[in-house]
Image 1 (cartoon, rainbow, N blue to C red):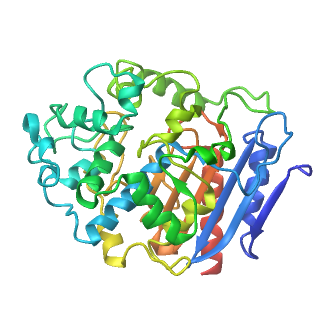
Image 2 (image 1 turned 120 degrees about the vertical axis):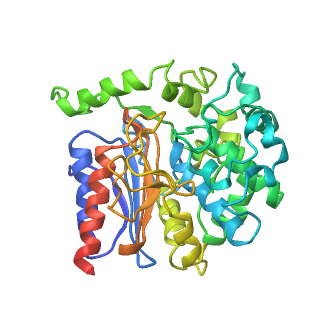
Length: 399
């Protein structure tokens, strides 16, 4: 694709990642994107490609910021892990030890580890909530504290698509005193010299690239593959509005509406499971800093990172909300068939529509990918898969 605008850096030996970017555009899968890779603590890939919209009038540039949906969860998990390392939190203690109101309706023994690994049974709310209530921190967290769990805690796990962020974020607020957005800004983003916002400052809103729905390929008339058809049918069957998955993703119908995530008030709110605004380099830098100093800052010790990456959910246990088996560590989604990343040992988080970021300590490989064209998936984006596999091959070739 000779007319593709692509900028940034790609160190010698990492050209396969750049080639994968070109291939994704040639296949008609992209409009605009960013991909970044750190290897052994060094930034080796930092590429931006394409355009901000389908008219191709403005290039996807270095100042572009992108909403990354659930990829935000990995950032929130890192903030929690930092609180654990500082002795403010313990994964083993009950949530109610730090948040007494949480003990209502039989939740007194739910541990921080269970909450972070989606085992608390609080994947949705029980009543219809107005958007203003959802965006008001004290209202939504009080609602969750006042609920009875939807299964006996510890007997199952299910993806807390939105509620995870308010639950984890309230823990941070209770022990640190700062809101999760402020904590992330002051303890992660600013020290690393990157941009990660949970609660976007209004002055930066003009830099956020609008999300584009991605039905269909841009330059392909190929029929839907059998694999894609099966995936679509499974989503329709198991993540419909009256299923646990549908309720988790929509807060039982409260969190719906066309263009919701492009709204200014949604971007400015703190939704630590879903409304992080960032770029690929920033995500890759955060994950790299879990293992090596970045800009002179290492966010976690090796021992703390290892503890945060320990899988908490039983092997091959079906996810109550996502149906298939998923694997969760302390807020991070661990490598599994559902989210392979670069293979065993990887931990991170994907986001709806395609974004993803992770660290694989064995390869010393940190990765971030963002884009403005949403694929109709929660995980398994083919664009990200091609980029992650290329990065892993390059790392292996240089080891």
